[in-house]
Image 1 (cartoon, rainbow, N blue to C red):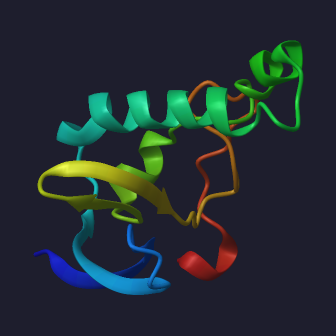
Image 2 (tube, rainbow, N blue to C red):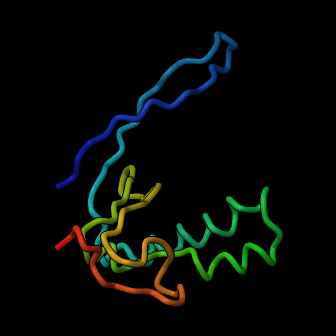
Image 3 (cartoon, rainbow, N blue to C red):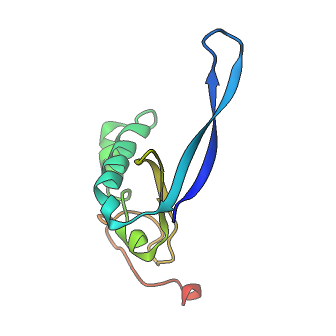
Length: 118
């Protein structure tokens, strides 16, 4: 089931009347394995582009070892997508596993449940 979320987006009027608020409807839902191609492309772009002001190309390439999509979160039902009109605009989730961050390609992963997760 999709939960509708309304997000306020600040836009600037073309006639210099000052900022005005507009709203756009975003959908929030659990990610599924059917989303893998779109999520992988989104994360690859985010890793490659959003770090450019802070890291060298070599550091960005190296960061891919510890960043990326963790499909265990999708299987656990703890990974979400935010979208608009069928397009994925964002994603994220939380883990109850011993490996608390990283993607499928991260070394040393441990899928054991944390003690409080039963």
